[in-house]
Length: 120
Image (cartoon, rainbow, N blue to C red):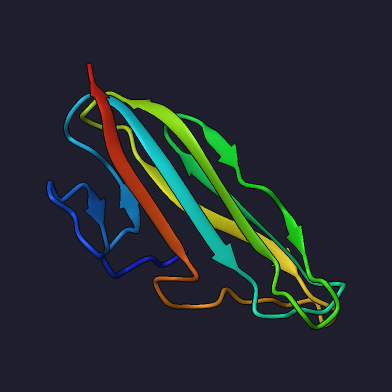
């Protein structure tokens, strides 16, 4: 997902060109994410995955509920980063009755956050 806007980034760990979280301080980081598919039909769904050089972590998959709620995928995980070449990005897959899908834009709808929990 092309996350190219930062709310804040105190150490410049998030690369908005390559859409990657790459901390330069070794330690344990809490990463959380959320994405929304703007199709509320019962056949629509979305899945958000955190993918990188370390591991892949999947968020909860979600389907539409009639026309009342957009499907959302979100998750949180604590991951160790080595402080040099470990990185993570947010990827998605999903679908609708037409076969194609999109991700609802905006910082409240598609986001990834990361914070240092404990330095190594």
